[in-house]
Image 1 (cartoon, rainbow over the protein chains, first blue to last red):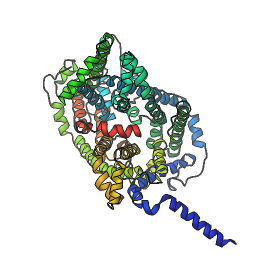
Image 2 (image 1 turned 90 degrees about the vertical axis):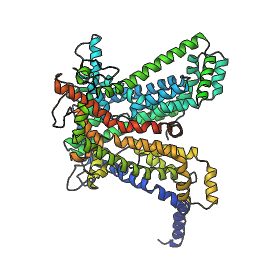
Image 3 (image 1 turned 45 degrees about the vertical axis):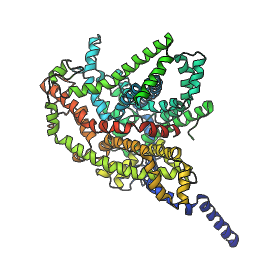
Amino acid sequence: MSTTGITAADSRAAAAQPRRRWHWRRDWQLWVLLAPAIVFTAVFAYVPMYGIQLAFREFDFSKGLTGGKWVGLKYLAQFLATPNFWPMIRNTILIAGTTVLVGFIAPVLLALLINQIAHARAKRLTQTITYLPQFISVVVVVGMLQVFLSPSTGLITKIATGLGMENVNFLGSAAAFVPVYVISDVWQHCGWNSIIYLAALSGVDPQLYEAAKIDGASRWRTIFHVDIPALIPTMTVLFILNMGGVLNTGFDKIFLMQNTLNLSISEVIATYVYKIGIVSNQFSYSTAIGLFSTLINFGFLAVTNALAKKFANISLW
Amino acid sequence: MSTHVTSTRRTTRIRSHRPSDIIFAAAVAILVAVILFVTIYPLWFVFIASFSQPALVAQGKVLFLPHGTNLFGYGQIFQDTRVWTGYKNTIIYTVVGTAVNMIVTMPAAYALSRPEFKARRPLIFLFAFTMFFSGGLIPTYLLYKNLNLLNTMWVFILPCALNVYNLIIARSFYEASIPEELHEAAVIDGANHFQYFWRVALPLSKAILSVIMLYYVVQHWNDFFTGLVFIRDYDKQPLQMVLRDILVRNQAFAGGAGTSGGTGQGYGALYADQIKYGVIIVASLPVIIIYPFIQKYFDKGVMIGAVKG
């Protein structure tokens, strides 16, 4: 405090600098336009993040979110030690991994196919119809699965029996769970997810197609040498994004499709978090499991992003 | 329009004179036909089965056309107060929720699109971070509890007021589609950001407004999780929770009776299935009706946003 004169000037300069850098006075209207979005994000996204410390505390109803006794890694250790741990990890990765992989490839193929439709109106109609299922709710999709796959009256069950399969109960079997889940997922989202690839294809320089034609390339070869290379950057970005959501895909649908007969394959981290936390009120334990899942997710995202950066020079950040 | 279509067709014919290309075009046509059939048939079947004779549906005689009109299922649905309470709730949550969404999202997207705005990069990072990292279910639940949001309609509206994905799409649209010269001209005319946003940017972004509104409407209309976790009273539950009872938990009849599918093929089961078909139609109709009106904006709106995003 002896050099008050200098520090005061310094701190005034330091205080003025960020203000000048952010241009508060010039941009205050932009901050006003942003204010609701910032407030909602701060409250509903960042406050819960602050509440993650509950994973390391004993939840205490009287002391609220962050007042409980510090117990460190007790609940994470409890989760790692539960006999359900490995089956649940396996199920989560199996379901999410298959969905991400199949759900990633299918829209690319569909976009390549739609791009080959020369007739403008037919192309438009194909797009309209394939986008449609995206807008149907998960509850309705699972309801439709139940009706179509019903062991006694289901249409698909009858077809399967007609083809000689015996005792098909697609909804009550652990083996059928993943195929049913993934196929219905592709049915619902494939069309919609192809939009972005169609956009990328519509941006391809027409001269490339002309050149390919002059070189005598068949349409099949043009797909491989013009279309697919044009899609690679978009594919990479979407793949990274999908990997980031790998462990929290589809709570709704898995939860709705879950029953006692398929539980051995349909119990995943997200449904377990719900059961432990909301159904049986073990708040700290459930938070710890949720944190575990979020961290793994983030890890997937970071690793995929790093690989993409190294090999394709594409990165999210 | 029609001349345009014919001209495209003609060029195609000229282009595909080689036998390999003709085979290729045929393969494309067949594949497209199969995909269209697989996509649309389940929905078509649900539609025709919802008003056909249930016994004929169960025997597999209703496949491509309705058969033996029977409106029993729709009669039951119209009498079922659960469906109408759910419908009313969902309409309220969707209308109020979407209004809040638009008020929060569009101004923020505009602000983040301004190139001279120095804070935009860090802010976009802070918004985007929440797409990949979250507090998880229980901290969220306890927060809602502290804010007295549990078991109220506001839990459907406030926490999801901003969808970051939509924010990024809208921002990219503003960056890519509104010429910077317009802003310069408006500034010379003395317009501030509020005036420019309201009088210039917003009227020029009808395409992205419609698309983002559709996204939000669908998000609210199909929201099932919020009702499941955060709502206790049945009379506040949205349509999707009622649908879950009818479709997934097999409580097709208002009284709670009427299992279908899993057991037996009796009278009750047949009609329970018909109720299910009907309720799928009744619940999905609003979204399916508005979708074609907004679809024409998809190319302009979604694609620009998506590719740049």
